[in-house]
Image (cartoon, rainbow, N blue to C red; front, side, top):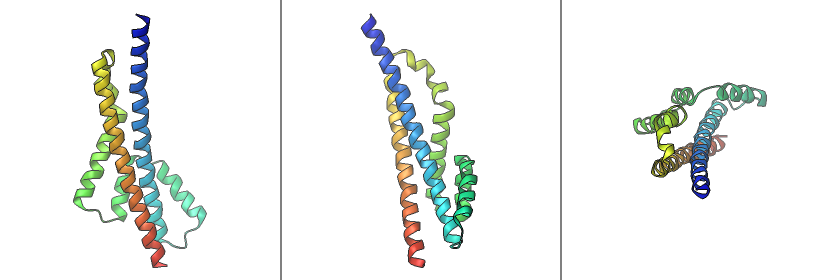
Length: 150
């Protein structure tokens, strides 16, 4: 009986670890959007000081992901497909942070339920990692473009 209890405990710990991983990648995506907005500011004002960039960075770090995406749309022309993708990422992030455990809490009691949660969390991690890499790639391209304009 004790062995099964420990197995259940470890299985629950994996659920929470997977949640942490998904939250980390969601935050990584958010940070990449912030970085992209910093690069946009730098491209718009090539004479901006380090202090000016730090002020912008501080302001961006207080914004929600939804606000960051709105800010991004103000400065870059995005395709409808990309805007839809950003909305999907935002919806998935909000689901993870605000609804995931509320909607799935009953699944924690059964092994099959925990497996379902783990699979969903792996999928969310993958989604946010993909989103972060897209934003990172955009930053790299914008940075490369800015260097060629100098």
